Length: 466
Ligand SMILES: Cc1ncc(COP(=O)(O)O)c(C=O)c1O
Ligand SMILES: N[C@@H](CCOP(=O)(O)O)C(=O)O
Image 1 (spheres, rainbow, N blue to C red):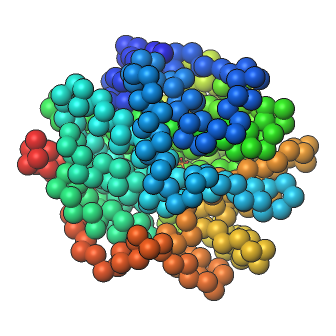
Image 2 (image 1 turned 60 degrees about the horizontal axis):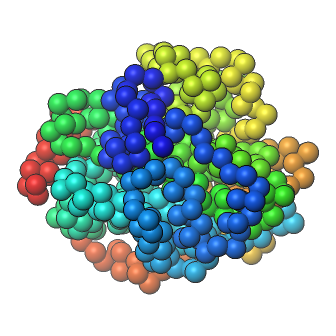
Image 3 (image 1 turned 90 degrees about the vertical axis):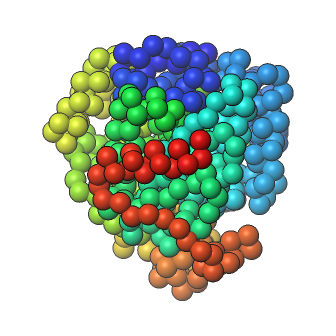
């Protein structure tokens, strides 16, 4: 399996090289040169497998010969053995048509653990074989950072630096990152928003000498391996509800567009998916795009669902590339125009094509609270991100979608106790392994929105350990 860049300039690579590279050298994102597809009986053969074995089967369609026989399966078994429920990704029925796919039973209580628990193991395996050391730089609005740190802490062959927007995550999210005092981990709070952090990460990758000097790698969903490892839970849910004979729809709380793109990829592989419903918050660029082809960035404003406080959704570039019939030059020009003008000129025919599959809703804080309250009254405690997904599933489910709707429940309510308490009067407790989180020592630096200062901090962190 070879990978190409969405901007068409970088040389095709294999999975191992894509895993280590993160972002392509031309600034684009990697995608498989051609999509693997499964026939009906191949989907059926996956039904009933334990989650980890199903995940290995799906991910193996993307990894080529990077892992010897059985290695990927063992890594998946190991990665998901630490989840709090044997189902790994349990489906909970909410009403006659809706199911919450609970993706928050991993160690850091968000869906990011699915990919990052595996990526930490993949990095270890590949780096040990190659005798190399990498420096990971990542940006987070709260959940990627904690999941990446948990997966990478104390690993011998890598250092990790995570940038988070100062004061813009929940206290639980921040503490999950900043209380990890392992020598290979460094946290930096940036004076800015998530987009500022993500921009800095991309700028570091686009600085070729710095990238080479640090041997940079990525844990954000710009790294294709992240998306590949998020596809299996959509397959698992759909098969549980009767696929491939029966279609399903997915509703996904969306910010950086990685999670919903993984659902799109599952469909591209042949999973029968009727609709993809996006739940955004007041940072509504994606909802505006779907409803009106208005992809213009506005300032990020803090909301009750801070992990989705994003305006520049990295993975949209992957969808754009597909909508433009995989034309790298047009994708690059469109992305350049977005950067220069703040508005992405998606051609109308490409947008029209997407609207038959995608639906979207921006859910205000008030509506998020009402939705959490409504769900609680029905016996389900949801976090604010999940509530944006369920709210969108009610508002956007096209009448004709007479199929089960699976809502990605992306975070544990205890990560956002203030919002959950405000909505329901119930303050969710952290699970036992995090019960002393507020008693742990925190360590992080605060830096301005200054690329040179951040690069210097990354360099000194890597040198200290390298
Ligand atoms: C809890 C939660 N829900 C939803 C999202 C949005 O997911 P994505 O960025 O993949 O669109 C995030 C952040 O990624 C998140 O942490
Ligand atoms: N919501 C994310 C933002 C980063 O998204 P990623 O999927 O690209 O890592 C977070 O919680 O950090």
